[in-house]
Structures are given as structure tokens and as C-alpha cells.
Length: 587
Image 1 (cartoon, rainbow, N blue to C red):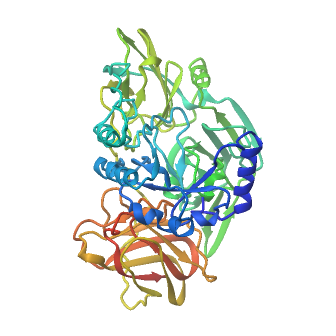
Image 2: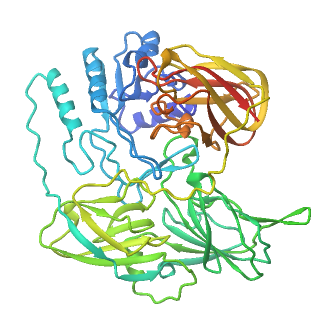
Image 3: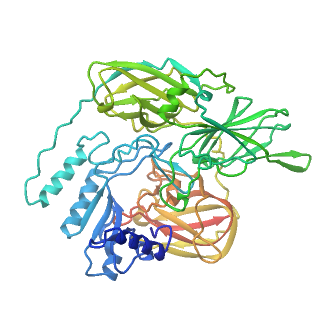
């Protein structure tokens, strides 16, 4: 996509490969965003646009009409909803806006492909993730699509159907009935339990930590262990854990590392020589969009411990690591229950199993909120990932995977249950319940800009599309503050879809290490990280009537020199909430 790279030779090679294997007599097309499609557009391809519910249809095709006035127009991905991420609110998109956009396209002779009509489920480990950083997707890919995760027509579907019927030459067929009933399953306690170490498959020793890929692990969990020298209180562990790790000293948990929070460091308590450092490290969804697609799991670099001795800093790098693999497969889970091991870990992490009996089968939603973090199997099928933090608290279990009589549930939990290890089957899903965790990184205070001079002051134009501004003077620092001072048309909310900062050469800085650390105001899922999530259809938005000026603070990950700003308002017609005046501070 031109959204994150311009490489026509690469795109040309993909085209040539497709033609060489038999797709030489069909029309090939390229899909991209309206702001970036020319970056990789090939002369012999059809160019199509991707955008979502609420977008300004005329603006999305304006540039294409200028450069190719005679080409047929198509929206190759018209986003009916959006995917959910662990730790964020459930995403929805208004049905009325979706069908309004479809009606506008059809009335203009524009073709479209609805993404998604039916989203479904990312069973097993197949849920992906987005960047910058890591934003892993939940198991459900319901997507707020017209046909829901479990295959039923929603009110959004019937609005869509009515819209399409208006343009159809024949009467649409009847909506089929659901093939399966939805059933409830009473609470089931998973009474069988074995510790996490019972699932160890292989153990290797290496001078340096190896990634999952080097251990021939596509997914799952690895125990990384090493022996420490004397460590004073306050020493800091730095470990690039991809993606989530519980840190233990002699089996006792002392904290976590969490890539979703860009948390790679942990302050340790004092430890005597010979203490065993163990990381219970779980890989989550792989990044599937952007520069971060080369997404190695496990310890993705060296781990160090830094401590002070007087005024001097000392860094210790362990010279030998023991890595025990726990393949997250049904076969390995069942094998764990046949082993008797003495756990070194003082946690509830492990494998839990229980059984329930059914007189009739049907679809159900397995409520797993009592558990911490891991994966669930039902009758041998990998149902999906779970995480107590939400927003998803139930897993869709298709009735065809259940049976009359005895059924089995296994939960592999890397953190351990929050109470009794129980599950139940519900008749409606829970996709929108967050259980907030204590965020040890949420300590950033509102910056005092008194006496500080902005490096850039921008007065924006109304309307859609990217706008660029150059700084009066270059500024260098690790933190960037956006001060929103006004909005167009006296809108109740302020909103920004995307920003880029420009480096000393006037090129866009990488946003891979950016982290939103402070906001005066955020509304629902329209959080500050949306400013740099590589998605032009999502946006930061303030609460209604939030008092201005509003400050948003981004940690750039390292010291950077900033010479300009690229700014994108919302994609909807009229760019609602677009900022009229803003200033940029870097320090």
C-alpha cells in the first residue's frame, strides 16, 4: 500500500507473478487509499479506492477522476465496521451511514465490495494485529458486519438488503433460517489442573535468547530462564518481549512486560546470586499491515539488567539461557494432564480441564471471564484467544463442534484464573466489557507550556484531505505536544484522523515507536493513538464542548528533530470537527 511504502518494482513483480500462473486473461486491479494510490499505481492496472462508512464519496474519487477521467470507479473495500483490539472499546459503525454511502455509490455508477458482509471468527491463533507498536486483534471478527459473527442477519443487514433491493432488477430471495439453535450451558467448573511446566515439550540451552521462529514455534508460549548474580534493589530489567511476559524471580511473579503498552523494562527487587529469572512469554497476533509485518515472537533481542553502584551504571547481560517450549496445541494440552511435575512457578498459570453434558447441541458463547490470558479448546478445536482485560469476554463455539453427551473444555492460562476456574455457555455474546488493569505507565502529567515557544503554528483550511505545514524553526526532543486551539464551524468536538512529523530532510518520521502518553480529552474509542495508527478512517476526537486549548502528548520513542507536520482531518463529508488552529511543541 502507498500508505506505508512506495515501491513500484515490488508491485510490478507481484503483478507479473500473478500473470505467470494463469491470471493473464483477467483484469487486475490495485486497491489503495485516495491519498496514496499514485505512489504504487501501475499504468496497466485498474486503480480502486478503499474507504469506510461515513466517508465523503466525491472526495474519495476526486483525484482518480482527475488523472483517469474515463476509468470505471470502484470502492474495493467499503468498511462496514471495524475490528476490535484487546484493551480497547468495542467498535461499531452506524448502519444508516453505511447504506447512505452505498446508495451514493450506486446512484453514481460506482461499484463496491463490502468489507465485511460477514466477518466471522479468527479461531485458534489466527487473530492478527496492527502497528505502530502492537495492537493485537481479539478472537471475534464480528466487525459490526451486516451478518454477525455467528451467521445471523442483523438490523444493519436488513437496511442493506432494502437498499440493494432498490437497485436490483429482480426480487431478492428470502433470508435463510438459522441452521442451528443457540443454547445456554450451565456453569462448569474446570476441576482438573496441572501447572504450566507440565506442557513443556522441548528445552534448549543457548548463550543468547532465541526467538520463537528460531525455536520452530509458530505460536504458543516459551519459558525463558537464566541464573542471576547479586542484583541490588532497583535494578532495571530490559527485555524486548514479543509480546507479553510474566517476570518471575525463583518462581515468584514480580511484574509484567507488555508490548501492547510498549513496556520493555521492569524494576526488580533485590536478588541474591543464584536466583532464577524466568519469563513466561506468550506470543500474540502477528502484525499484518505496515512496516511491522516482519514480526518475530519471543525475546526479540538481548535482555540486560542495569544497576547503579555509586555514580556508575553497570549492565549485566546473562550469558546462558534455558528455553522451554510450550506448543499451544490440543495434543500438547492433553499430554500435559498425563504428566506429574513439581512446579517452580508460584502462580496459578497452567492447564485447566472440565466436562459438561448436552442433551441437544447448538451454537453457544463460552463465557471465559473467570480466566486470565491464554487459549481455549472445546472437544479438540482451538476456539480462540482469551484475555480478561476484554472487551471480548465470550468465545463463539459453533454447534457443529459440540455433541450430545460428554463435551470437553481445556483452558491454557499463562496468568491463572481470577477466581474459581469456571466457564458457562451464554445465548448472547459479550464483546464490549473491559476490565481495566492498573497501568503502571500512566504517570505522565499535563505539560506546562508556560514560557515555551511552539516550533510550528498552523492555520488549517476547511474540508477533506492532507495538509502540510513547515516549522518556523527546527525543534529537537522526545515528546511532541499538539495544542488544539480552535475548530472549524464551531463544532462541538475537535477531531484529527492522522498526523506525521517531518524530519530534518522534510521526510516523514517513522511512527513505529510512538506512544500516546497524555490527552486532555478523548471520546470513547477515539483515542490519541488513532493519530498514528495507519488508518485514515479512524480518528482522535475530544468530548463535546471540551475546553480549549486541548493538549495531546506523544512520546516519540527517542529524541527526534522536527521540521514540519502533515495533518489529516476526518474523511467524512465536511471533515466534522476539523481543527482550525493548532501549535506543535517539541521538547
